[in-house]
Length: 411
Image 1: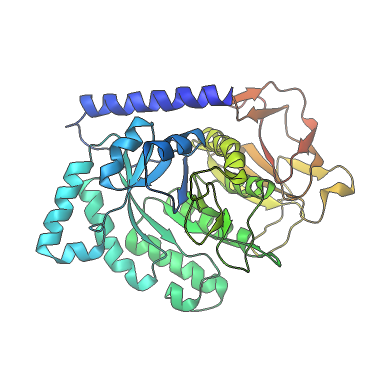
Image 2: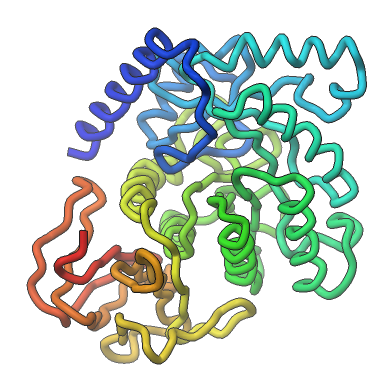
């Protein structure tokens, strides 16, 4: 069923893209919007037809490619993020390079697969003025496509960030300057916490800080999560840990999800081996990617109103508010020390939906979920809501898994 739904979606998307190219080539460009929630990756192989087919089957919907591979993306109903050496602030300071950049934009901006331009990864604040000029130039020439820049995580040093202070102060200032100077249409960042000797303690701090910055800027955000190891001190996540990353990303209101890495030399894990053989993480992501897209699409018209934790008090973890319309209580001691995260969503200030996630990625947990009215549960595989039965229900959560629920009568 999942495969049939996804295949129909890819075919429809490809047809719509082609129709748009034929019918609206000279229509005024509309500002970039997320559209279908993003599922992508960092560091992958060249985009051949075989690679593109594997990515589409795995639920990825944004691929990285050069100009010569845009048609490959189109053939498989995929959106493309273009990388090119001209996509740098230095191109604005050279007459010849500027002319070449403008010519590139004119060549690709009407291609039906183009979704975004890759600009840079993890810039220091000192680079923001130049990046702001480039983003403004691209927005003027091609407002319909995203200029993509990825930010550092909270554990970057002050020297890397280009700001001063403790972790929260320096990082908040880094992101503030990025938003104010660059004026991005989307905030992207990465955070990798799965070490051999235990998990890092700033994952939720980073999520919370980016969520807040994105809300204040009025833009969506994307979370790049760990799917490999690249150094002896880090471990390869398992499928349950990947589920935890995907569902917590959704609970905080992200409209984009990316994995580090798909496949890259010197990295173990990822989505595929060097010869293209899918890994166990690919098989897990094949389901999780579709779950994320379905949930994030359902939540896209809504606003992330609050995120609370029932038990966990790591940095950035706010407790569930006392007046929360949804209550979650573990049934017995199996809830563990981490408990649940509850992300509330709604229009204006009234919560109507929630994403509830089991933060124990090692075992299933049963919880009692109580709402203000009869609860409906979302079925990602069919993008449908199960009929409401009662306002209080027992829910079995997979390790690291979650549920999207709404109170009966909500649109």
